[in-house]
Length: 423
Image (cartoon, rainbow, N blue to C red; front, side, top):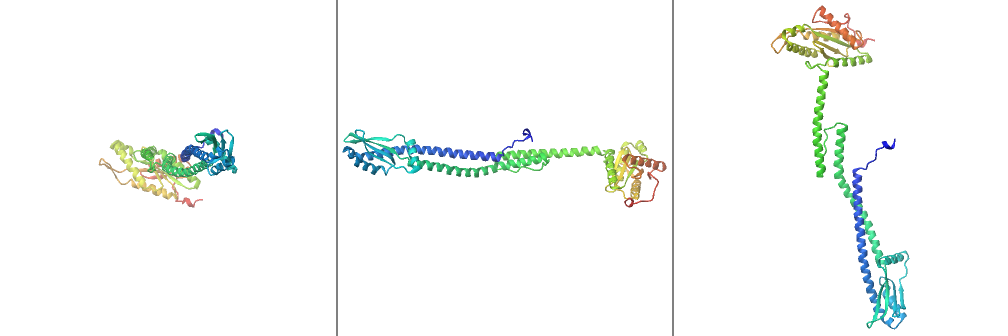
């Protein structure tokens, strides 16, 4: 398949909304966590600097005497006593000449110690330097570098909190997005299903169910109203098409099939008969003295006579037989399937006998008419529609010449033969 013919795989609404909800939730939690962590670090930095100043003042009070007497041993002892219990990484004591009198440094504790130093250097900045005063005179100063343990623990706990909140928010976002997606996607899927059924299957009787969201419910209601109109229009169109099809294939006066419909049915019956080796009969009917009825009683009376003839002929036929008006006062009857010639002859007798009862016309007139009938058999009298029509027509005219109101077979009368038993 060519790349140009490939249809792009579009994401579903559920996946788009789901990713959107999750992204927004994670972004919000991440920004909130980072912001809170930064604010906490800034607050802790202020607190750590203030604490270092307090520690430096405490060290100054403790080592003041040792600095005055320039006692390095006492200064180291006093410095270690305080520094090792506080958040101090490095502490130095200098005399008034700037010479280092005491020094204490916290030992590294592996990787964590290196991280503490880096955090302290990055966040606490330069060491704190405070002068040592004795009797309002400067006798030395201390330099203290804070320990980054508290900051490191706070950062790690902050990152852990952010990670935990992120995971929790992801699950919460998924939960609520599924609920929201259900309220949004379910009605849209229902609407899409109904629309597809209407477009592909012409199923206009389905309706969109109510939706919990007002806008979607209003959309479904409008779509249902449109389907109501389409269903009415489709039903009307079907009725119109059925009416037009019936008018195209039936006689408007008698309601019988017309010549085109009859010839099509005859052709199909002949093909089936040839394939299944069945038999059938064609009856050609013509009303006797119909021109005289039209001339003396008028065309309206003639139409009534034709309607009466159609009804009486139709009443004499079997369920699967067909009668049609060919035009004017000519009718044709198709008897299929046909088991014996006697079946066709008996139906022809019934048709002729049905004409003996007088017709009551709307104008009050009563008249009796008759039919001349020609009978042609397949395959004896013809193997196609044209030859059968010609044989039945010729037999009908032969009946008229002999005696009107009778039937005449296309060939000489023969003993009744059961076609089912013929080879």
